[in-house]
Structures are given as C-alpha cells and as structure tokens.
Length: 225
Image 1 (cartoon, helix red, strand yellow):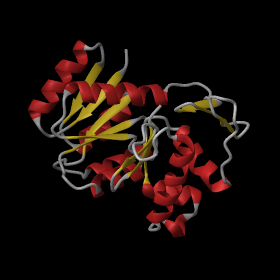
Image 2: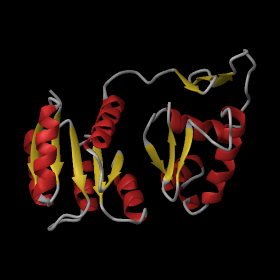
Image 3: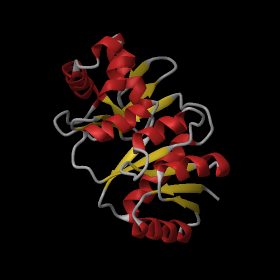
C-alpha cells in the first residue's frame, strides 16, 4: 500500500484528503506544519509527500530543501498562490509537480499516480513516442511512421532527451537552461522558445497546437506521452 504524507495547515483539507486517499487504498499520515512534516517524513518514510507551500512555521520551500537533503521521495506541491514564481521555485528546489488550489480530488489522484509511475524502480525506457515518431534515446535516432529519419541538432537532442526521460513531469525553465546551456544562461528563456518551436515543427502533427511537447506559461515545459 502506497504511503502518502499530506502536509497542510487547513484542517478541512487534511480531513478531506485523508478520507479520499484512504478510500482509494492509500495509507495516509498528516501534518499541519513544516516541523511536524519533517519529523514524520523521517520517522515514517512515506512513498510520496503532498505539501502545501503556505505553512505557519516553516515556508514550504524550506521544507522541500530540508527533505531533499536526505530523500528523493516524490513531492507534489499544493499552492493557492496566483503567481507562477512560487511554483517555479518549488520545482527548482526539488518538487516533482504541483496542483493549484482549489483542486478536485480526481486531479490530485491523477498527479499522485503519474508521479508514482515516474518514481517506480526500473530501467529508463530506451524508446519514446512523440505523435507518429519513434525516438530511440540510446541510438539517438528518430523515425517517422513511414520510416523516414528525422534529424536533430545536438542542442535539440539534449533538450528533447531531458523532457522524454521525465514523462508527464513539468521541467522548469531554469533547470532546462542550466542543463542544456549552463548556469550562466538561466535568464535566456528565448532560447527555449526558439528550440521548442523547432522541435514542434519536426515532431508535432500540428506545431501550433502541440499535444506532446507542452508549454506551462511562465514555468517550464512538459512531455505528455
């Protein structure tokens, strides 16, 4: 049974998530503040953590930093804040995904299942599909449905590979820029727009309405299988 630690200072949210997650056969523990969350994570070793950013004692970002000092347990952030900056900072601190309040239990369950699949042990998939194209990550080849090869530049490959190796996960702009171009390029977001446009032209059936290489405005990009 998957163990989920829910951290939120609103009693009604804790109660609702405890009831709904247990009804779906998750084992649930709760914490109403960051100090308790860090202690229970250390004692209980959950398989996944649902963490509100606005806690009364410790900022949610500091809780993420504290957890990432010793565990890679997946973290889904809950945020009631309208701006994207907090979500970007949470992702760059080590969170795996986010859900904006108010949310439905179905949306949260879907995110929990998706993050759980990504965290499951196993070898990296050697191939991935982007529409009608088959991408062989090991051989660094892309083949269209009719067998025609698609050629990418080294930079396009690097960017695409990061996204494909994290299916369904939002990768922040800062992380992509740092990994592909280096830490001195974290403000050059126009690089990402240019190269993502090139990838979509080569791989998406309709580059103006992408279905697989998705933009999360102001935050980053996501590969949706």
